[in-house]
Length: 185
Image 1 (cartoon, one colour):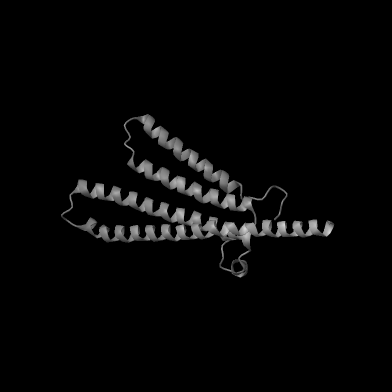
Image 2 (tube, helix red, strand yellow):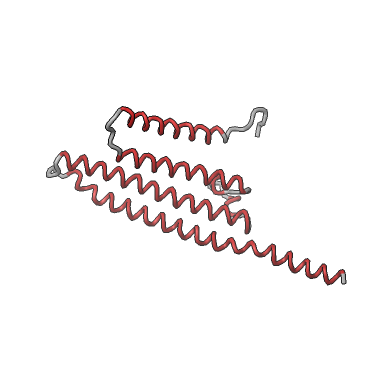
């Protein structure tokens, strides 16, 4: 009777352990979505560059040139945003794979592999994703700030406050990377 219970327990543990492979759906989907974001951002960059040739035209009026410059800056920020989102998805895919399926041996051996792409714990995955998401939010803030019309001094104060909060967030995320006092690792 006890050996039958052990067999059932072993079978259950085997199924439970192998259920982690369901994460492969998220890994593959995130990696593919990352590639799509990189492709879209690259296509946007290509078209922005091809349209930029018209900026040097002597027939372009000063007001049109200023509007064109504003649109170009907005498009460039959107392109950066697309690349950052693609990066988040790629880090997420690699992190899930390393945490649930297997370590990526080639990344461990590679001298060119960034530590950003080598993930050994859920906390390190969350930290890396949070930093890239913070960068996306900063880009979005910049994109919104470009389009603002400053009508009062309070509008400028709000912008300065937003910039100050961004600086604080960057300082705090950078400060979290420093080793604790007395910790020489």
